[in-house]
Length: 176
Image (cartoon, rainbow, N blue to C red; front, side, top):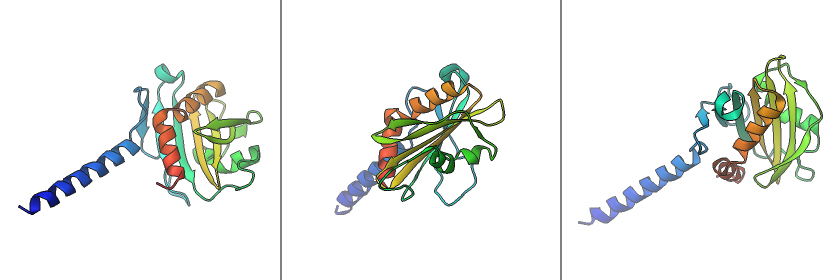
């Protein structure tokens, strides 16, 4: 008889843990974005999350890769300039040969401020680099697609602005 309360507590604890894990890994709602495996080799930072959206839903075939880089930001100035976006936004993982298309812009996502910049990869593919700061930490995102820079950027920002991804980014930046 004493086993029942222990078993019930274990069941609730396991159920609660799986619910939290499932929530953290849930792809954004709407069906247009699909979570895919992290496509890059391991480096000094943990793997992040990767998503794909097709032409019909996003106006271009787009993939977005995002991950936190905790302790990797200037605590005073945040993301200071385009050179920093070039260095930290993981665009180099998509292609070692990327050329900037224009100066970057300030961007706000999920209560984080940073910069966003567009790149040409090979004349056919566009990349977008995003670096956002939160205290002394960075959330970086790189997107690539066959559409023009405006389409790829719009799709990437739509994903990053979704409630599910905003919630995940906030939790990841807090180390949870």
